Length: 73
Image (cartoon, rainbow, N blue to C red; front, side, top):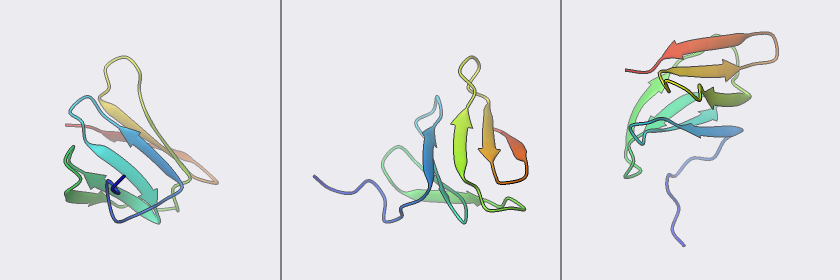
């Protein structure tokens, strides 16, 4: 068993394109092959990540004080 990415976190979600989002202080974005491809800065520490079930075009980021939405390209 090999690790997918060299980063753990509080939550993980994936989108329709196979990208994986990991909440670890910010939201780190990985390609389906495990290569880190970006970071989404959130004003507060992310606690949980969710992708909408229908269109899979929105990433919801839950923090202690708010829920943020991020459009998925």
